[in-house]
Length: 428
Image (tube, rainbow, N blue to C red; front, side, top):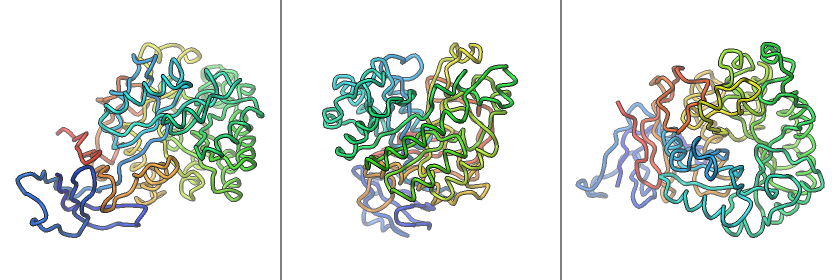
């Protein structure tokens, strides 16, 4: 049993923003009141946390993580990925399916879900849309969904066959399940991970990824989703044109969603010059006008999710030349501090809006009974000191490929609690 006192509670579902005490027992929030009478609990059995000066928020939910298990566990595994998530304030994550073997069959899905059960947080898993991530044949979506697949994605690889994708959307609509799409057409990419025609591409004298790679596929796939009624999540949006396409599509259908990563709302292509391969990612960092458009999308709800695209790679891989190094950065341990520092403190989002983007909306998208704080609800929450700065580093992830290492950020996570158990506590 845990009693949290002097908590500044912010919850987007109930629009709560006030001082409360919370009593946690048996994985649930038993009470949330201004003052909780001691007669309601056994003092000898309760752990008291004084949250004075800190905010208590619903546990964060990340719908886009790569835990590299099976097949690439030298980069990350489900155990270390879950530890990184807990340190970052996340109590639920949805794993992507581009492992080796890919999660395109029952056996592999069972493996990752069983590994996830041993984690200190809630771990969900997507299955692939196409067999072997080859974009040629659909998986048995019905069977995989029945076995526990949270959603479907070929993340990392776009689905170029329009008729195949239409069939996938029709099937997903029937199942009432989410499709999450990586929107980059290789026709417009010479060297991935760097914005084409910009300062970084000129610096490295490479072609890069043209913005049309993203725009063209977002345009196509939004129209397909609107025609089929499929629930669609546009992953890691990077262009101002992509944001506007989503904005227009949302006016035509409520089943359209989009996510932004912390690196796309904080960095531009200039970071690739400064940090090299540590800032190489797909889709790439783009221009300041794109970064501002993403922030505007987050403000007006066009982009309703913040997701990390946590993508661990080894140091040896990231030390390769820019054209050979893999794309991606880790993000679970920096997401909330980056959002607090660059969205909340700069006045772009309120705390309630941030909770909506990082907890409630992700939970609703995947049908998870979490993302809110209320009596009877899940005891999944994060306690964060908004005024305390910390220096990024000392990662719990198995990898450390981050351009944010060494930065001072606000929003220090004091505790992460999942299922009523402390799964992370800040060390002095």
